Image 1 (tube, rainbow over the protein chains, first blue to last red):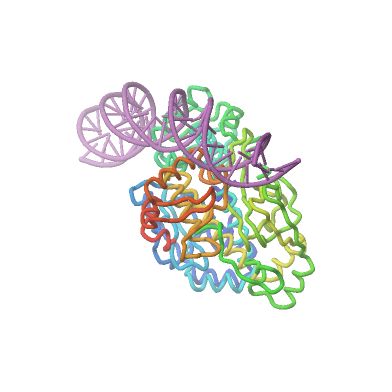
Image 2 (image 1 turned 90 degrees about the vertical axis):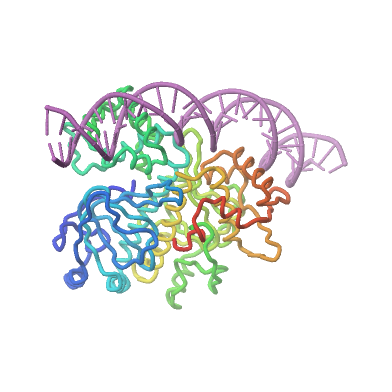
Length: 242
Length: 242
DNA sequence: CATGTTTGTTGATCTGAATCAAAGCGCACC
DNA sequence: GGTGCGCTTTGATTCAGATCAACAAACATG
C-alpha cells in the first residue's frame, strides 16, 4: 500500500538489495555500483538532509527508519512518508532536495555519488524502469494518504496507521501478535495531520473498546483485528484492489 | 508544483505532444505509436474509468480536465489530482485501476493499447526514463498536497489553490489578470478536503478583504497578489526551491 | 420568458479536534 | 534507588470547520 514499509530483499553486494538498483543488474553493473557507493550512519533524531540542500548523493536505506517531511515557517510539520530498508532517497534529474529527511531510529544509508549514478540510470534501461515502478508505487501510496489526510476522522486515521504497522511489521510474529510502534506520539501526529494529544486520546479510546492492548509505550497487541479494520474506514480488504 | 497543470507542448503526430511518450521519439517509434492509438471523447461529468476496472488502455489527455479521485463507502470523496492536456493516465505494470478518473469538463483522450504500449516502454529506454521523471514530478506534487491537506487552514488551502490556478492558467493573460476556476465549489472542496460551504465562505471573505474579485461564478481577478501569497502559508517564492 | 434545476451564498448551530494546562509515567544517569 | 527530564495521559475549554437549513442567483429547457 505505501512507500512506507516495502518488501525487503537480501543482496550480495550490500547488506540489502537496493530495490531500484541491483535486482536485475549484471556483474559489470554491480561493479560500477560498488565503485560509487559508501556507507554512512546517522543517529536517531539526526537530520540526514534538508529541503533546499544541493543533491550530491542518492541513497538506499540499509537499516533503520527515516522520515520524509516538510515544516512550515511557523513550525507546523507534516510527515509525507517513511523510508524503510531498501527504500530509495533522491530524485534523478533534480538539483535540490525537496523534503527534509530525518533519522527516526539509527539509520544506515548506502550512498551513491550523484553524477555517476545518473549516468548509470541513463545507460541501463532496466534501472530507470525499476525506478519508474517504484515512483509509481510511492505515488499510489501518497495518494492513498491524501485520502486519509483529507477525509478521514482521527479514529480512522489511527486505525489505518495501526493496520499499516501490523501489515508491514518486519517480523510478522503472528504467534503473539505483538507489534511495536516505530514512532513517538508526536511523530504519529505529524504523519496523520493531528496533534499528539489526539493520538493519545484515540489510542486510549481504542484500548477501552478492547481493540488494542498496550505494554509499555511502544509495544501493543491487536485484540480485535476485525474491529480495527472496521475502524479504519477502508472497504473490504484494505485496498487489496488498491 | 503539481501534476496538476503541466506545461503543454505541441506535437505533430497528435494535437498535443504526449509528454511521456513522443518528446524524444524517432520516426520509427512514432509510427509504432500511431498504430496503437485512438481518440475518445467524454462529456463533462462522465466517468472515464473506475477504481478496480481492468486496465486495458493507457491514455494522454488531449483537451479538457479530468479528475483523479477516491470515494469512500459512505460517499466522502477526495480528489487526489487533476489531469490536464498532456498528462498521462495509467500505470505500466499494473492490472487494475487505482483511482476513479472523471471528466470535469469535456475531455478528449488519446488512448494507447496496453500490451503494445508496455512493450514500447520496455524496448525504448528514453520512454521509461521520461515516465520515471513524470512519476517523480507527480510524487512531489502529491507530497506538497499532503502538507496542504494535513496542516493548512481552510483559508490557506484556498489561497494555495487560487495561486495554483493563477500559476497554471492556460492563457496567462496578464493584461487583465482574469482567471477562471476550473472546478465547481464542491469539486474544489473535495480537492482541498473541505466542504463546499467552507469554500464559499472563504472566497467571500477573501473578496471582502480585497484580495480577489468575482465576475459570475467562475471568473475572478486577483486584486492583491501579495496578500494572496501571504494567505497561502507557503514560504517566499511559493516553492520555487521545491 | 417563465420555470424548473442546478449551483452558490449566507445564517444558525453543533462538534471533533486543537489548545491550554496539569499531572503521571518511564527511563537514563548519577 | 533517588532525581531529573522527556514522553504520555488526562482534563477543561475553545474554536475552526462541519452540518443543517433557507434562500438567491445562474443557467438550461421547453
